[in-house]
Length: 354
Image (cartoon, rainbow, N blue to C red):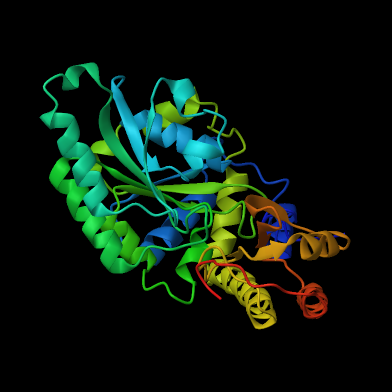
C-alpha cells in the first residue's frame, strides 16, 4: 500500500536523525534552555526578520494550540475560528476542555474574512445582554487551512487590521506552514506573518521533523509566563534539546523550505493528473493537499493500491477524497499514481475547478 493519507507517515529527515545521533551523549541543560534551542531561535528570528520574538518549542500541534489559546483567553472568553478550523473539528474538544468555547464562523474554503470578525465582534458588544454571552477574545486561523487553501497578503492584512482595531489577538496555526509559504499562489513570507500576527507557530512534525512545533510570540502582552502555561499543559519537554536540534537543522540552511517545495511539487503533479483526466477538485488548493471528486468506481479502484482520506460525500455516486503528499513522498510513487489515474474512467461533477 502506497500512502497518501497524511504528511506525517514517515519518520524524520535523515539529517535530523544524524544530528540527534551525533549529539546523543552530550550533556545539556533541560527544558529548552540549551545551546541547540538557542541556535534554533536565532535562525528562526532571522527567517522571520524579527529580533524581539519569544520562541518556544513544543511537541505536537494539538498541544501547541491548547497551550497557546489557553494562555491568551480569560475564563469568560472564546476563540473565533472557521467552522472547518482544526480546533473546531479535529481536536476532540481539546479547546473546550480548558473551559473555552470555539466560536465558529461559516466558511466553505476554510478561510475567514475580516468582515466576518468585525460583524461577530460588533454583534457581541451591541447585544444589551452581552455579559451573558461568551466574549470573543482571540481569532484563530491556519495557513494553509484544513482545505489546503491559503491566505493572500491582502487578506491577512485586512484580518490583522480588524483584529487590532477590536483588540483581538490573531493566532495562526502553522502545522503545515512551510507548505503554505511555498504554495504557487501564496505571496506571504514568514516576515509578513510575523508582522501581521500576534502569535503563530512553525510546524515541524509534518515537515521533516521527528516531532515538534515552534511557537513564535510577537505581541509583548502575550509573552509573560508562557513557560508556566507550557509546563501546566504537560508540554515542557525535559530533553528539550531534541526539539532545538531539529529546528536548528531545518532552519540553518533552508532545509525547511526545500522539503516544503518537494511536497508541493509532488502534489501539483497529482493535481494535474486528476484535472487532465476530467475530475473536478473540491478546493482550489496549491499546497500539499489535493481534493479530487471521485466517482465510486474510481475511488474503489485507487483504494486497491493507495491509501488516501475520505473527505465528504457529494452525492450517491461521487465523493471528495484527500491526497496528501509530504516532505518524503517518493517521485516514483507519484508517477505510479499518475499512470493509474490515466487508466480511470472519469465523469465530471461540479466542483470549484474542472
